[in-house]
Length: 72
Image (cartoon, rainbow, N blue to C red; front, side):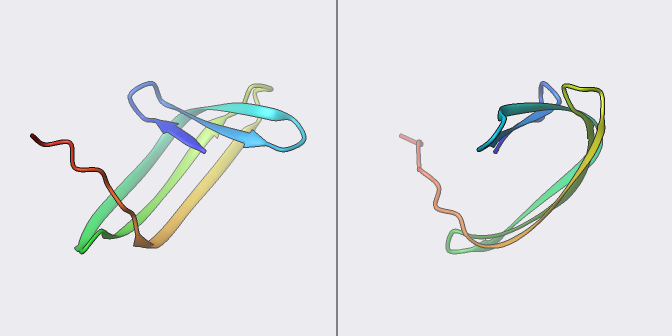
């Protein structure tokens, strides 16, 4: 799943139907760094899919999220 909040959509790769693009109409995303690459990510979104149907997504994740250090 790919989120692009700057463009207000998320893509979902469905095994049967391929990539489904959802346009976000409202939502929140909260990311808390707990230390040692451990994060808590919560959020909820409402969107309209390619067929103009309403859809919703809830996110609740806590765990390791390794990040690359690109600072030089």
